[in-house]
Length: 162
Image 1 (cartoon, one colour):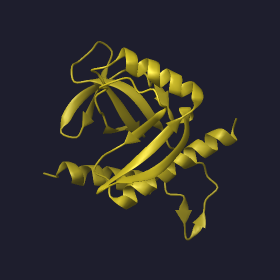
Image 2: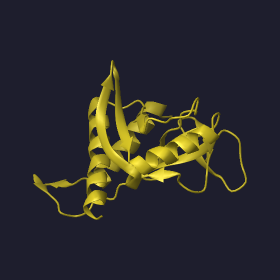
Image 3: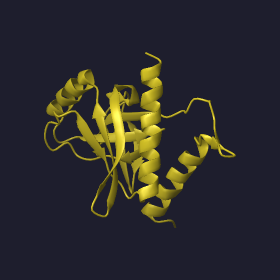
Image 4: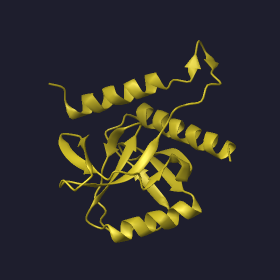
């Protein structure tokens, strides 16, 4: 049986391989299919909420994303001691929405879902009003850097299409 870290690593390697933009040393002009969602989540089943795996546990996700990659202004790699994280800033409008969402749902979780897979689902302990979130997990430095780059590329593409 694979450990949680091995499964997460395999999932991220699969995602990175599937969305690779470098081919024979040349950048591709094909769009990167990257979808990052922030969805309310609970440890308890709720009507209409779908089950998802979060590490070794099953959580239940709200049917619709509260926010997604189109609501982000910036993403970057941010180490903290031995941990490798991805920080994101929301747009001004999304900052207000995230503050409202987290204010009304203290005690639930906010699942961070990347291309259909739950990366993490931290508990909402207090309203998050500053327009910034950190994606944490058992990432290696390279995994966190690659994921931050993928998210930022998606943000850049979205901003370019506006």
